[in-house]
Amino acid sequence: MNKLKVLMVDDESRMRKLVNDFLSRQNYEVIEAADGEEAMDAFYADKDISLVILDVMMPKMDGWEVCKEIRKNSKVPIIMLTAKGDERDELQGFDCGADEYISKPFSPKILTARVDALVRRAYMVDSNEQLEIGGIEIDKSAHIVRIDGQEIELSFKEFELLSYFVDNKGIALSREKILNNVWNYDYFGDARTIDTHVKKLRKKMGDKGDYIKTIWGMGYKFEVQ
Image 1 (cartoon, one colour):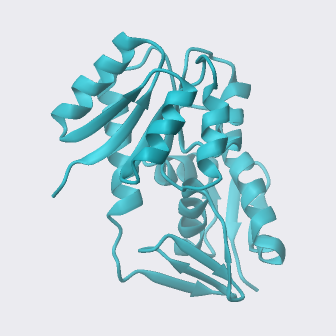
Image 2 (cartoon, rainbow, N blue to C red):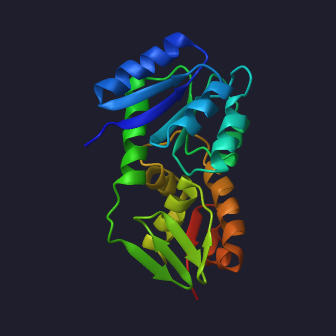
């Protein structure tokens, strides 16, 4: 199997080298970029990039801008890195289409584990898995969702969230359980991350968004009547 390519974007050369060293040991090929513009050039030059790691604070184009630009054309998994601890930055990261958010300083082993988890969920799903319920079709192998026959554009994490809801239809799911299963690790961030994603998912689903019921004080339940 060919090595999966990861684009590592950070203006600190030491940080790029650290991540490169750890991911290379796990058989990833790491492409480095030192600023936002260099990142976009690298991303458009190589169609085989499987995951992007983005620092927020960078010259020329910051991480938010790069994330939004990539999301215009690609659903590639994106991990945001930031030194800021403000939860508003985390929510902004998810709002622009990021799939994971890691605050500096972080353990390279944790970063590697999250890269592994994202790649596994994004590219190694069962090709036979297709779901259909209440006018919603989910093709897990192609990462495509259709509502009443019309394909809708979902981010990687929105796709995972909808798939998890459908897989657990009729079951009341706490925010903690959703975070631990959809994000695929023990998540210590703010549970409002879920609310942000559900709000965007409901909007994209139109009338079918009503299938995602809010259970006040607990979480959500997917129910087709």
